[in-house]
Image (cartoon, rainbow over all chains, first blue to last red; front, side, top):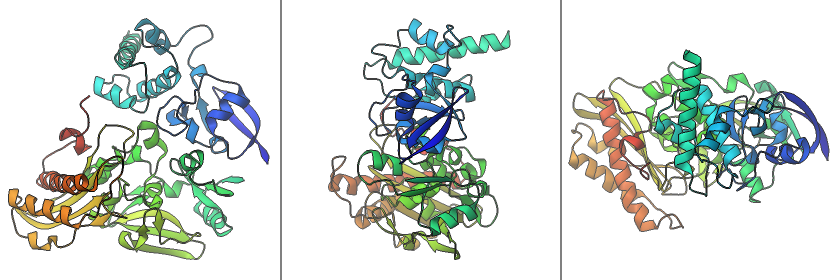
Length: 160
Length: 297
């Protein structure tokens, strides 16, 4: 049995007709049509499915879509402004922090949430902020560098 | 399946009386469903938007609402200052995303013997407040946990809060966990301690153990340590009692012998850290990092 559920994703409301036991990542990918969010382990371990719920990172593979009603969801598609990449996206390309790319959307969402609440994080704080995201191409150092570069960039923009 | 998103406790209790099961962050319930361990209940009531369940109230007793998340527990000033072992434990749970939605009440009511917040709650003397359409009762944690994944709460009851007596002066607490990595880890073993000092001597000490028995257990027989100084002899006695009273299993993460040995090490470190905090020393949360436990960054 399915029900009509309204999901607010990246500022747009999407009415979707879904079974209520479906997970958010599956609904985002298959019903809303936003496939940037990846499904890796489906077990709340790898972080490929990370999205922001009211600004906080959650594992969308293990979150019921129906429970996200009335909350604001941000996916990786919500980062760029039109054709203009978000500084995190630009920097992760520049530092070489993308190899196969499967972990990248989740990494970006965790990084975005971290910088939103802590615009000037230490290396240790960045590691903790990304500790729920696995990369199997061993790209952690370059991902860390991308977050550091973005923090520097955002701080110089806001103080100028 | 049905899903009701409740905004008041009365709504939740009415739904439970009608057969619904509660969901907060879903980090146990939905993961179990996805893994095929247990199907989702036919009827769910979401309790994460009920304001009265998400409050931390200072006073005697202190009261922590059941849907307070791990992320809040590890940073809330009342918890960090006075219920430090709970903050130590919350900071070790899962990853930032787990801690954002996972709740104290969920951790307690899931009933895992490896739950991180359980041992801290025991040494701080916490009781669980259970509400149903018929009324409210409080139950000690040793009566609540009846086995792995089992509690004495009835289907119509919701854990609404953990209630903790105000802490005496010169008290400190700590939770130390053996872990192989720093995130997305489950306790290999863990120990919580609370210590109250009278000058340099122990006025009271309590120690509880994680992942070495079918439920969280408290170490018996520590009354004999009252009046003694916190020294190596005392810490050795704590370690020996912890190893003796543990009844660990072997699984893929550790053998029973390894757990029996390391629980003693964790217990003595927890008492040492709790005593140092009781004496006024500042050890940042989680104490695991100060002790260098877990793989190097």
